[in-house]
Length: 176
Ligand SMILES: [Zn+2]
Ligand SMILES: [Zn+2]
Image (cartoon, rainbow, N blue to C red):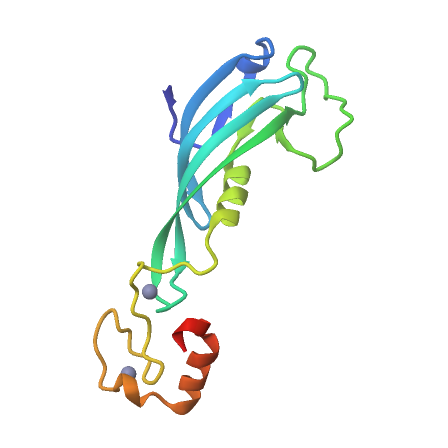
């Protein structure tokens, strides 16, 4: 398996091979939201290249409970077909029945770029209620102290009635 420290690779050789030809490689690269790495298998198809990948990303996140910044590990997998815009044999633009924006493309230099597909799948895989750690203690509703870092002087019984009301509304039925 080839080691690559990037998200793009040339598939010129693979495109010249018969349907069913395979490659695999590791990729790694920066994203707007963090970094991604993984393994991809490439399969030459009739029209292009089918990419099957496992991705592990480290995403800059904000804890939904204590609001501090942390790096969240997000794992995902996808299978997507990439289609060349240029015919490798003739050098002419590929005429296809596929609609514009349908699937991913291999550019005119026969470069398959994983950046966008990895980013799309990673963003979809980020949990909505991510926590900096499973047992994050959260913030004091009264003084805003981060209970992960310190205890505060507010008694937990002495929470303002309005907060107590909110807490009851948010609590699961069994917790009330
Ligand atoms: Zn937290
Ligand atoms: Zn407090």
